[in-house]
Length: 436
Image 1 (cartoon, rainbow, N blue to C red):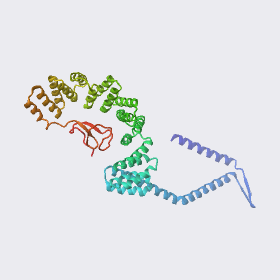
Image 2: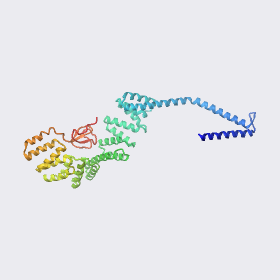
Image 3: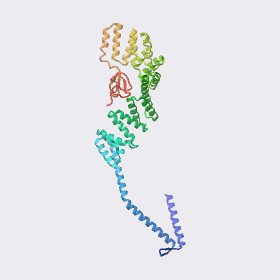
Image 4: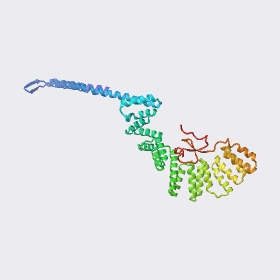
């Protein structure tokens, strides 16, 4: 404020000084033009010129105001229309969020009419159409969004959702690839693309997706390692089909190292190492996985390393595996069966009783009945154990998280619904129910 007052004072002083200077030196001016002669002083001429320029500026301002009035009116009208359109757009998205189908549809039409930009209002219109069950209109609107760079990602993700809903995996994969190519670090998009590539058996492409997801930090490191184990396992199977045992073993080892909890990868590494004459490494791989994810498949692979051993040798070798994870019921069951075959009744009973405490099942009761018959020839005790079989908890099995159906064997994708990485080992009551 002080600076402005100072500048104003300086300007006034300069004008006063100029006026005084011209008053002391009036001078004279003579103008001859078209037979006319005008005699005046310099201050009067300057005053006349300034007055003429001020009048000219006033007239020009008046003309521009009158001429530009219609344009300004239309601009204000368009701005007000745009503001109402944006308000309808935001209110419509809020209505979609709470599932108000009627209000969302009404506001979508209003925003579409006011903004007249299908690419901008496409998301609201598409979501409103989805709420109303009109997938055709939703797809049309989402497609228009793809044409605009600012909304292309949202449009492609919406089209991906529609394609997945109608079961069009080929179209869904195309939309997922295009959306991923835009460079978004979205975890849901990375997961969708990987799952669709896995469904299509495109394991090399799926592994490339995981590499890119790691660079974009789109997925947690643990998730990436687990999914990489799946891709490497499947590529190992393909290498074996292509008669490339070296690559098959190398890929299987990578899969095992990527995720020690992937039981089938550990069993596969063991088989391939045993085939290559590397039984010590095969046993180490099984032991590592047994410590974190005990499973009957690992017991089978362990026994397959020495198929010709005697019952007593089998007991001694199984004891090494059981010691690696003494809390695993499957290990005690396997050791009890081996002890029964070797007629080591006390060891068999101890391991069966331990397994029954850890995880009671029909198989354990059947083995206890067998033990009573073979050791003591006690049919009454055997029948007592057999009477518990019907009420015993269900045996563990593979179940699909996605569709809830059981599977005989583990696979990277569910044999029933094709969902990738969805099979889970456990008892039926413990298995997760399919998503609603």
